Image 1 (cartoon, rainbow, N blue to C red):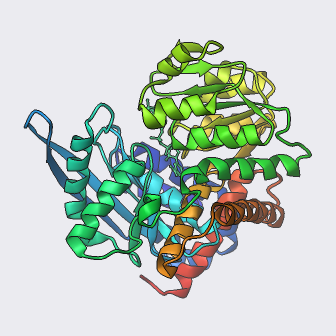
Image 2: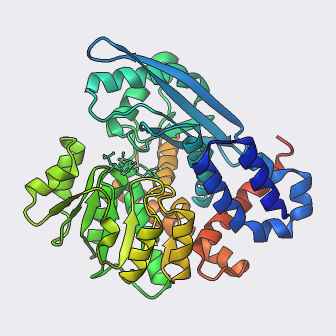
Image 3: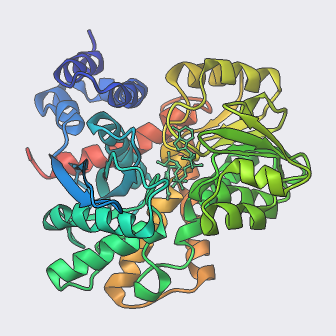
Length: 444
Ligand code: NDP
């Protein structure tokens, strides 16, 4: 058995009931096998792969809060501080009923390599809770966020661990979390990113993941002689990542014809109306069915179905494992050119392989959606400097970071003869830097 297979087997057995973590462990470790084989003796002796797959620390805590009826509710909070070899832990908080330790570990593990690819000094972490902000009043969301921070504050800090948003955690939640952190610690510091613009937030952070996804996909298309001009694009999701991916795709001359939420999806052959989408989702906090009701050109369908639509580029921006093998078959038979992942691990391993085997250009999440964390790191820099950069400055830096990520991937693909397997290229480039930093710091 190879060293990689031995470690996958061992870590899987030691961490039962964490299928999403096992999935990412398999994807990453199998695709870096070529590097591991070349350094096997040293890595084995240092137990490098075992150390990398074990979080430095994982914290689980009780979050009690009182709802609007006076009833006490109890949720579980998590923060997994996975790897600090190249910088303080950095990664979002997810509030969604599906959250459990396996999901947070999958996200935290991915974050290590993603953060490494940005070229910025940030380690990997992730956290969250099984709390569902949907349908809760503002007061209930605030009560939950304050209680969550009452425990989390002792584990984070601007030079230790800097959380941000993710599913269910947007500007409102980050604001409440930050307010409570400041109250508990008396520190006005860059301990959370995605903050409001009047209290240390960075311009272009809201747009960063979606815009970055398009900058990355643009590079991937360019390397293969294509552009977004005149292309049709399908997007899933209608949250932060999806909204700004749609906006940037339209700016680049593409037509985006779909968006979705967890109850249904919209097909809008005239192109998604981004102003209406923002008003429905960000201001009025309504559903995609409400978008369809207010947009005469849009059809609403219950359930899943975005990838049945014919288009050129697919951008899954909702959640993990939303593109399965049946969706991949639809994407291939509809003659798509490319798929680039906006969400984290939206494509199953089987679907990824099928797409790659059938010549679909595949942009993996840890590279394609790294724009969010990259601008979060730029927010940290601005907070440390006590300065604010303009939208254009941040957006230009973001575009350059995404270009550079694609270049690192291409270089790794060339160095290790991986063709245009960008999954392998991203994992190898992200891994090499972290591995070198871990080895340089001794057995810790
Ligand atoms: P939001 O909460 O803003 O939006 C999430 C969207 O996905 C909503 O449309 C939501 O629908 C849908 N969704 C969530 N869960 C499910 C599900 N189980 N099935 C179907 N649809 C679902 O989150 P973000 O846009 O911030 O995050 C989307 C993805 O992007 C996640 O995978 C996240 O980890 C990743 N990501 C986010 C970054 C960021 O900066 N925000 C950075 C990098 C990655 P509904 O409203 O019905 O729940």
